[in-house]
Image (cartoon, rainbow, N blue to C red; front, side):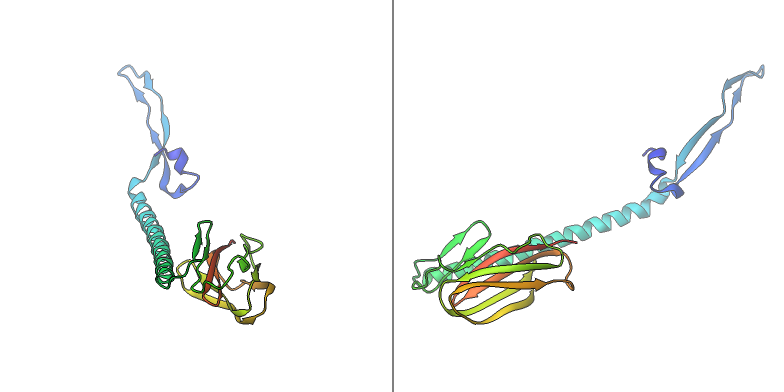
Length: 196
């Protein structure tokens, strides 16, 4: 490490040093006085240890996120398997983060839609819009990136039509959230991102 690069960030670890001039036997200066900066390398040890701890915390957090995604994928696979076992012919998965699963072949899933929240990403408030193609019991749930339930915004019977729901998130931390629309055995999932 170069002391001049470290000094603006950690000035307490850098000190000024001086080398006395060197003279020959006749008293002639052969090396002038030298001023230089020195680093206290021992003081870096606790800083490096703390950095490793923070890096490990980040790794652990990423492992939790991966684990939550694996859990969600497993749930989707289970739902798809159940759908196939029941003989339903209209199950579909849209790889663009939209998941539609139906156990009722009579439901026209093309008429029911869950749209991307607006705005996304968002800071405090966002709006969810969706269309109900067939009257039924409707749920609109929010979960965090680890699959934990955050809130249920809608839980009621709704007629065919377009709906809009506002979500105020002042009390929630920034992060990735998933909103799920459930309509009589059909499920749609999309991702919402809250930023600082």
